[in-house]
Image 1: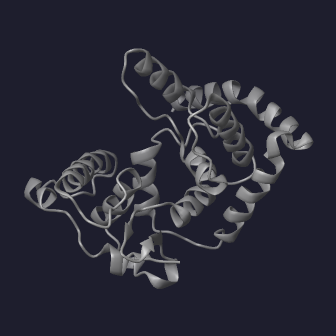
Image 2: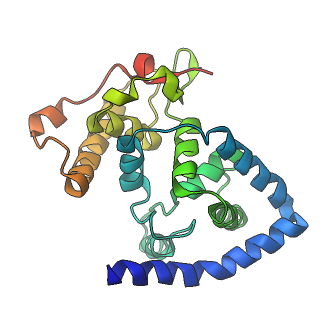
Length: 235
């Protein structure tokens, strides 16, 4: 408990100056910051009434941002780890769920320092207004999962999905598509990466929640084929 409190306090101290900067940038609408902030808040508000199953939210957090409960929009630990990894010649991601959400909303993906700083400030700003669950839910509702012959696939509204029957293995297969979007033609290479991702997340979820079946055979053949019809819709 004490360790978690110290960690959260450390994140707060490290993030507070960025929060002040984000408020200032919002006030003067530099680089269109205010406009993009309003856009993010509007998208989050649109999905505010949606209640996704905990299996999806838990799996998302474990897969994409396992310190999400402690930080305030950006993960400084992950940033330093990614920087150190880059210096060693290896590339690692450090984006939080909040950063991924604002990136999808404002649709800016250029690999520049300016874009990254802008994204971090925006993530910190919306984190001071929205709840973690609100941001995660909105992100899952607009995230890109892949495509088939009909085009872009989006997560369906909860009223169209039998989420009461959703299992962790289903949640894992959905969240895995965030890293490896489903192509229109499933190649052996994609299936291999997708299955590897499924197994990796299954271990994480099992370790954290003790809810995943440890049967290796089940995980080895777990490459679901029903998501295009049951869990996703084109809109």
